[in-house]
Image (tube, rainbow, N blue to C red):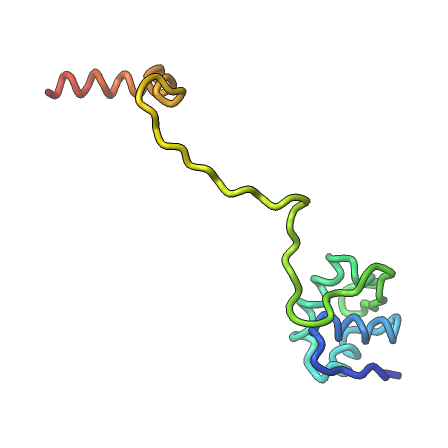
Length: 124
């Protein structure tokens, strides 16, 4: 029944292979094939279900798992982080300029700033 050979592959890929070779398999059987306990693989299976690599059927405790037609998880290593469509550009910090900048205008027009200036004059 469980003929998948497991060697130096990522845990997610090992799980995916077992589920692909045995559609409709339950979590205790997957754990037995991995040589592990269900507590050790449940988080990985949950993440793979959310990622769309595995389909699940049934209720809690009697769920069965089937490999989805989408691409399998990363075969080796821990995988790569998903980046956005375009990598972000580094922030550019500008030196403050003397004179009438937008920041100075906003600060001067803020009521709290004006009140603070009046209190400074009274205290001095």
